[in-house]
Length: 347
Image 1 (tube, rainbow, N blue to C red):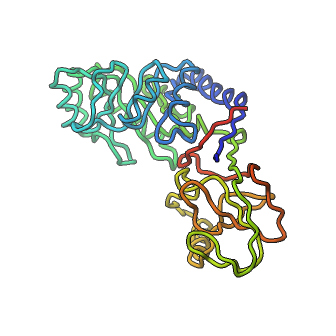
Image 2 (cartoon, rainbow, N blue to C red):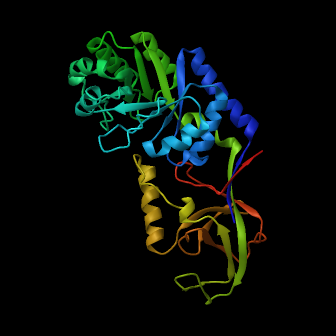
Image 3 (cartoon, one colour):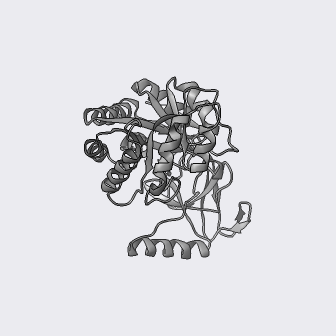
C-alpha cells in the first residue's frame, strides 16, 4: 500500500542547484527551508539535499524539527519560530541560530549566561511576528548580550515588498550601526533580494522553500496504488456509510487517505470572482453528497464514492470506464505542503 512521489532526480537537482548558483551570482546567499512535512519530501531529505548543495545554513520551522534536520545537515540551523521562554532553547547546540521577535525575550536572553546566536525579527506588513520598528533603538542596546547575527524580515506573498524590505533594513541598521549588516528575508525573488542588498549595503540571506524545492513540478509526479477493484450493481450498498449505488459501476479502493493529507484542503483565499464561483459550486456538490477526488483514471478526475478513509479512498468509476488492475498506479493531484508520501521514488 503506497502513495508515492516519483522524482526525476537529475533534472530536479539541476534546477535546485541552478537556483542557488544564480542567487549567489547576484550576491544573495540562499538559506534552504526544511519545515512542516518537508514540502512532500520530508525534512531529513531536504536537509541532506541542502548538504549536497554546499550551503552553510538551513532553516527549520520549529525547535522540534531541529534534531532531524541537524542530523542530516552539518552546518548551522536557523529556527524560524521565534524563541519563547517556555520553549526548549537548544542553547547547548552551537549550530542553532534563534529567532527573537519580542523585546522581553531579547532582554531575557541578553541578561542570561548562554549568549545564544540570535537573529532579531522586525515586524513587517505581514504582522505575524516581529519587533516594531519603533523599538529598534532598544534592540540596539541589548544585542551586545547575545551573539547577534542580523535582522530578519518575513514578508507577505502578495505584491512587491522590495521597498518595504529596504526601508525596514535601513531603519534597523541605522538603529544599530555597529551590528553585522546581515538581513534574512523571506518571499523575495533572488533579483529583488539582490536589489535590497545593493540599496542597503547588507549581506542578504534569502530563506526559500517553495521556489527552491517546488519551483518546477514537471519532474514531480504523485501516484497511488490500486488496492482492490469491485464491481457494483445499482442498489447495492458500500462503504462505511452504506450508501446505495445509483447505477452500475466499479469501486476502486486506492492507497491514500486523510493520514496522507489526501483531500485535506486548506481554506481558499478566493480573491477573484472565478475562484469564488468555483468554491460555491464545490460547496453545492458536497452538500449534495458528491465530491471530486484528486485521483485520475483514464485521464479524468474521478468522484469519491464516499469521503476518504484514513489510509485509503474509495473511488467511483462508471460502468463504461475500464478499471485499472490491482497493483496499478494511478495519478493523484496533491498539495505538496499537506501531503505525506509513503515512498519517494528517485528516477
